[in-house]
Image (tube, rainbow, N blue to C red; front, top):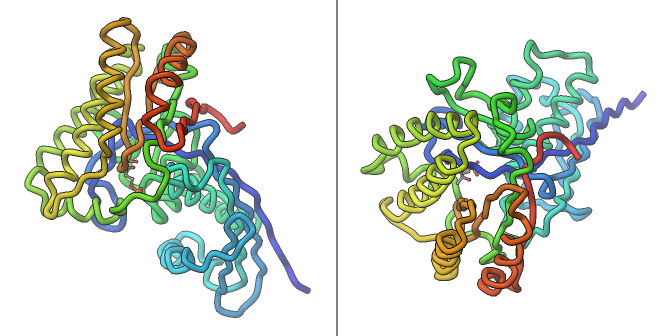
Length: 340
Ligand code: PMV
């Protein structure tokens, strides 16, 4: 008789404060990174697995439509994780995925997609009667093998990935959730995303990571990230928004600085990115309101602030920054500490 096992899972997108940039070995990071997960931007995945002795076959539907362009990435991911999930050597796999955020919003979906897929594959493994010694860590490890930053999206809230002397249990293989140590000042942290450009970025993050291998600043970058992890963890523990802001901005600009100084170098900021950063700094100085920003590997800006300042900051964003965005698009999101 045909045996089909299914799993529905969700996973949030995340934004890094200390950036993962550069890898070594099999998708291990050159430096530790720390991010928080978002509430509105997440991926929903349904996987059905039909047990059989035949060699594994794979189908992928994105928003209800066959998306064959993603199949090679998924195939090499599955090869990498067969060691952890041996059932994936045979059978029929159907992966259906959709995002809660528009796909032309410039928000990277690889972290949330790979995290949701990892959760569903691990759940099917559990339903087949197999267990891991540490389920949470292994799910994160599976996600990491799909896309590095995805290992920070299998859990909610503040997640640290990569070995650091600051936390003994930290690992290059998986992310660990650190919510308990975070001061209530950071509860309900708001993240308003200025969508400066909607399209996909011109240089993929895997190319960016590989350019770190021979980067002149590699050693300095690794030291900077380690120092910033220590600084930001202290700031999060103390509820110190000012130091948090310093680290955020230093990391955002360093990430782009590393891209510009790679061989070959490249720029992912747009003129509007710089214009928005300047306006934001001016607004902060004039009004003495705490807000900060970070950038991903692209032109869009994440503006971070505490909930009590929402009203004034949102009206500043709508009036002064939205006009710099493509079709005035701003996504008002926030930190998620648990599933919706
Ligand atoms: O997980 P990847 O390979 O897409 O790399 C993500 C890199 C950054 O988003 C720029 C930084 C980070 O830590 O998320």
